[in-house]
Length: 296
Image 1: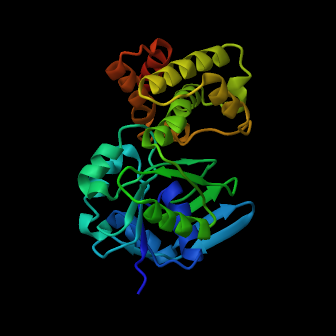
Image 2: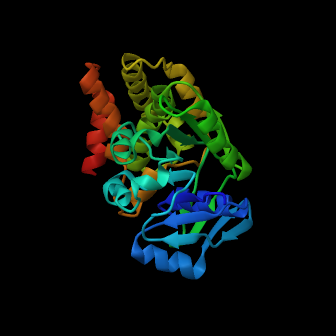
């Protein structure tokens, strides 16, 4: 019998992945706290994408205790420690763990719990938000997971990628773990603080005569930290990616801040600032933005 796949945390990201994996024919288990388990068991999960409503009723459990071939960790950073306790490490002893968190510091606690079965991964070209406990909107039907691992074999990563591709999720497999994390973290550190502080979309900020130079300076600092950490990031190339983004795009961090929920500001932007401190690379502009955002 083929082992199931599992999603830890059915929020916006985890919910979309759970629905897509289920509709692709995978036995999918959602792992969540008791209050969420009841709602998913009763109503399933729905995703509205491009005017189409996708619905699935994955299996839902308060704890994962059976072996899986693939586990997505899709909780917010502040919920990670308690969420990891919901999964027995033995369940992924023969599988692959794909963390979908943002920032630079989540791999260590995840690997401390699961061991070497954890890939470095990032999720890009993706936007989704919840409009209810089990109702999600995905404005654009895109998602790209980039993975690398120093421990897992290429074959194991390809097997995990095949499951995702079968569910309509694009996958790139690369060689360097740090590059996978930094290429998103440097850019998102700037966007998360700017969109959270201003409550404005990316397009408005990059056209703003005050905010654009602040963002460009902060991005240059983040790229300098990445270079010091062994990842060659060019600020102009990273800025080109920002200019190619949809005008009305915002960040999940900004949505959380606007709605008074705990945010990932520290986990995302704060982790870049701390990396700069560790590597001796000053980040005065980014540090100021982070301080302003956390104090707001």
